[in-house]
Image 1 (spheres, rainbow, N blue to C red):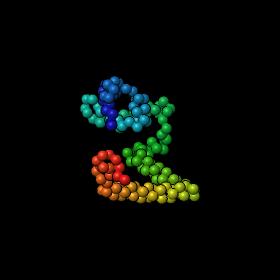
Image 2 (image 1 turned 90 degrees about the horizontal axis):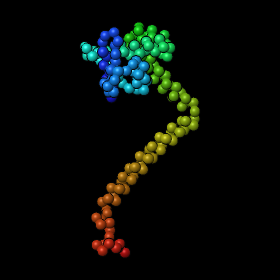
Image 3 (image 1 turned 90 degrees about the vertical axis):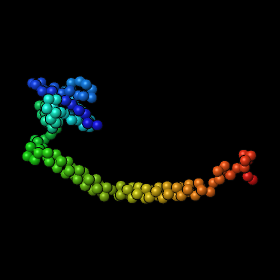
Image 4 (image 1 turned 120 degrees about the vertical axis):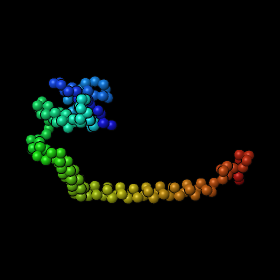
Length: 157
């Protein structure tokens, strides 16, 4: 769920969290984003979406405090390419990670064996599930409603 933050104008640019009904600081916004929370920041007077500006301010303040981890190269690319910079970097990173995993798996015979054994186990499990389903459907049709017992409750003998 997206957390709605309202930004109030004036010199203070206060940020109001509508979920907790209280004012918050940029440090709290940074912590929420780092924890995976999606945010939307709206200007209270104009209803303009100011999420990007607010997140840029979070980055600026963290750089001022010395806690930011963005390189100058990345920031240059972000300014040059705009929004595409991050998506291109993430795409390249994802591709590199996938290649690294594939290369690592290929280098280790036990990992290759484990992967093929896992595939064989999955196939066997699927066959077993089909067999059980077949047995249940056959068994369900041949059973008598009272479980094969006489009306007296004693089993047939």
